[in-house]
Every structure is written in structure tokens, then in C-alpha cells.
Image 1 (tube, rainbow, N blue to C red):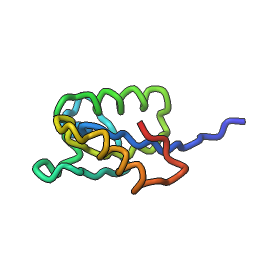
Image 2 (image 1 turned 30 degrees about the vertical axis):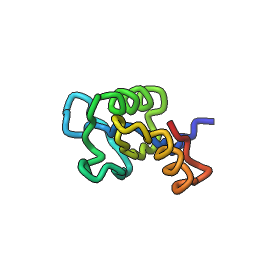
Image 3 (image 1 turned 180 degrees about the vertical axis):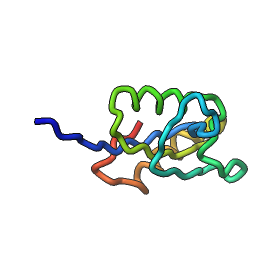
Length: 95
């Protein structure tokens, strides 16, 4: 049994830096919920980028989807819950 299983993973956080060539990440899609920073493919702290890198190491065939939130906003937890309700695909693991 040597089949590849594609797992969908949503990374909800500060974005993922696709500009930094050292990570060479492939992402299936993304969205930003930060009006002043519409680029989901940039990270404000690097945390989302590190998470994506670790997920790729563990599950190289995963489909990564990025949701960028304003991590400096005290309502971020509520916003994250709303993102998960809006995008409630049961086949997506949300982190």
C-alpha cells in the first residue's frame, strides 16, 4: 500500500512568507482578513511560515491553505472562530 494521501491543512494566523526563498513553500491558496494588509503570502512574525514549513516536513503532500488574521488585534480569537465557521469544510485540518 504505497498511495499518497493529500491532506488539506488551513493555517490560520499571521500569514505565510512566500517571498523568502529559503523556505520554498508551495501553497494551494490563501486569503487575508486584514484590510490594511491584504497579502496573505507575507508574514508579520514568521510564525505561520514556520508552521507551514513543519507541516510540509511531516506531510509533504499536504495542500496548504492560508488565512491571515491581525495577530495584534485583541478580537483575533473571535475572528479566527468566524473564519473557521465560514470555511467549514470537514476535510480541512485547521491550525
